[in-house]
Length: 295
Image (cartoon, rainbow, N blue to C red):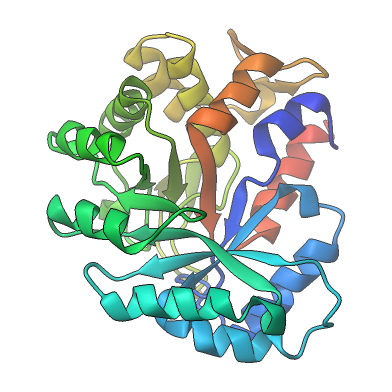
């Protein structure tokens, strides 16, 4: 159910990463799933299609089979650290916009060292937002300082296909607080298929192990709390909330237990802080949102 509060919090929030684990879809299957999501009733929650820059020619071929009069697709390209060929692939793809009706307007990279941030900033010009993956931990402030100085954005990995890929609540809360402090917008990725924290299967394989995973609502609302000046301890507590029954979506706010997040706070959080999160599934985040919002 769509309300003003849910639109403020979740509009365009899910970047579709179906090509990546644990889904690992083929290019034609991922393109078909994204096209169906764009035509569905929850298209308002859908963000960009995420693709490795090296696979942009493959994507162009898959897009050629779609109707030529469709609306333009927005893409986020995963760029390898220091790979000039990936920057060339992005430019070549965008130069052929009239053929495939899609544009790379964001790029994401994981530099091995701080000077990789400078390389990324030098390779891509205006019109492409750049996200630098930063590991939560003691070096995060140093990286965020450089990212802020270059006018770039950050990316944080909130999980993976193994239990040890998930940062601790304290480490993740400290990272979120640092992005707010440095005024660096960011996106999250990995392990955010679900709306609320809980123990879930790590992959789609039969008999896959389960582990505690963050919910995307936990991460969004923890960031909103920090933006409002609440202490890191509040954010850490929100990251660990598992009580979905305590969530309430009203016309003018979202409540979770004793914490209230008005529309202005939600809009500000999405505009200036947590821009989106990547998920290899679009249906799972949507289905869990529907279950919560329809109560």
